[in-house]
Length: 196
Image 1 (cartoon, one colour):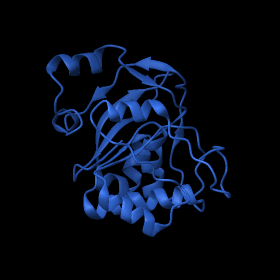
Image 2 (tube, helix red, strand yellow; image 1 turned 45 degrees about the horizontal axis):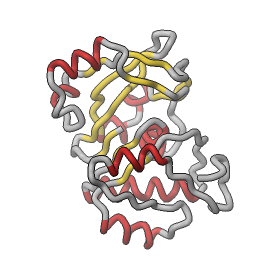
Image 3 (cartoon, helix red, strand yellow; image 1 turned 90 degrees about the vertical axis):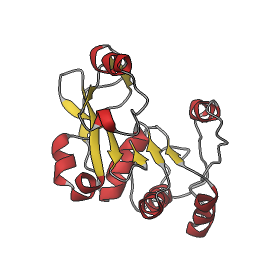
């Protein structure tokens, strides 16, 4: 939403151009799902598209606001239908908080920080990393190859505590913040259609 902390008017939306270009570079046609759309309008769009991206940003979630209620509706639709969903940065955070229905994130010291990521054994077999070569895994795990722009993250403890997450997802990698605290870096649904 624009402004980012607008929880009532639902009058503006920002679609970050770099996400659009990234998707278009792989042949996708991008369609914005605006926060003021009705559930019926969203369901119509979801029946015509082949995936949803929750982009990054800096919003404090409010689960009575339209952006969040529509986002949760999209997540539930994806769980029921198998529609692919990808969440990056704030989108990853929204997938976790949205499915649980409350804030479960932990504050980390990680603003603009380049670091490694530790791939789990499940991660080595997941869809998201299916085309990784041994050299790719080596880069991901042993070189500063992943940039983190966030201060909120999902702890392993919160993941394990929330059954909706631990029953739906597999942790595919971990990261560490600037103070060495470990957080969940990536997840993939066991059904193979929701990624964060």
